[in-house]
Length: 200
Image (cartoon, rainbow, N blue to C red; front, side):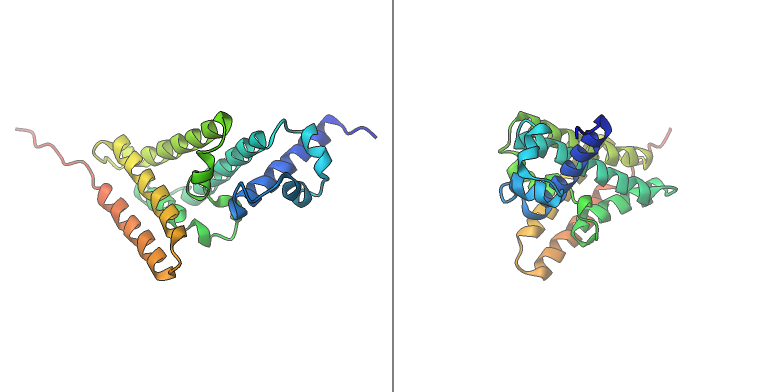
């Protein structure tokens, strides 16, 4: 029996969702197409009815992971002040490993080394995710009247991504926690409001 168009769309979504979770949990190289299709409850043979290549799946799964991350941010900061919102985003990002929901992990800090070795369609999604993260942070630094708020936002994102990546390399849990705590302090230092200009 031939599947309807809506069934095909839902099946594709199921594959992408399974891929996002597996890639973030195991890494791209360690996750095969068979692994993804098994988790999605499908056979490997059906993969190429939906995707041209694994690279295409990586790109779509990464885009979905970014979407989930930003949805999580929005749900947490609703109704909060700009400073509260930025503090929540920073803390949530730095301690993303502690979140129960695997899908709220960021591809940049969890898959960055693999994403850079992927083809252009994957790299484009990663760069777009970075730019979205900078815009999200800049939205709050601007409202907080932080000097050169866009530059501050880029610095904050670099601190966040780099610190999470580095903390994951640590075998010592105390060292990992120290890296994240220092990153949070560094962000706070970057978030000083612009000095007021005294009028003569």
